[in-house]
Image (cartoon, rainbow, N blue to C red; front, side, top):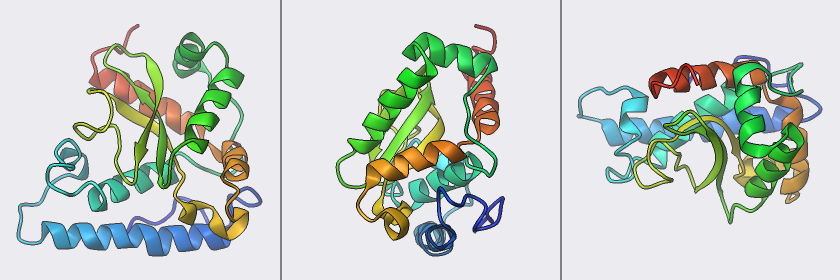
Length: 203
């Protein structure tokens, strides 16, 4: 289990320390434990390489849970929030009109996920960005989860374990708090990497 890149209480008051400890130490660890069981006796594989065929191999919950949470922790941070700038900001303005429009659309997508799942900001093959959602621990890298070729760069976990201790069933309040801890420099780094991977480093 990779350690959190900050203290459990670093995202207070937006995400509480008790939730961070429970979410990371118990839930994320459980996905890793189940993935290790599923991979026992099989050749070692890079986590990202497992994602495209994860649904067919029935690794989407354990493998997806590990991948999704690694991204989740790394794209959050203390003294974060604000708005994206640079190439990512330009791509988001082109896709959504304004940052406020993006926030409204992304928040609505996250609030509208039925049951448990994720909302994502993802990069398409042409370098554009779009909002998609997935159920459970599926993610856009998995064949059949969303349209083909999307690379996720930001995701919000809307399983109740991500917010229940502080927000109870008030998912919308959790989403509002989550915006305050999004690390846009890290999301921008992932955007640049995704553009390079799709051959669209220069748009």
